Image (cartoon, rainbow, N blue to C red; front, side, top):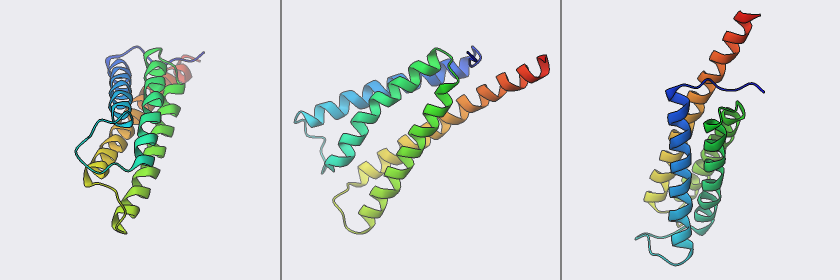
Length: 135
């Protein structure tokens, strides 16, 4: 199995993904169980984000184990977050019940996952280059 290199960037990305996922699941679960976040909750977005928290943890574990699948997982998470961001931005623009805090949070998630993907992709490319040079 081809693995990502053991470097600080991959380890940091893995830790961020796991922490981000745990915090997302915790926060989403609290609101689902009745806590008031202080703004109007768009329930489909809350459900999506809470479920994605588990995906964040899974991608983080893959990165922690230095699996090259981590970059693919991060790409999928980033794309799903981008698709939902576009959807809720359109909904918001048309007067839908989406809070600006939700838009900002979704934009942050999307950017964070694009950065995590790029870190993991770059690490994977270094391994591929090293493997090609060794053969």
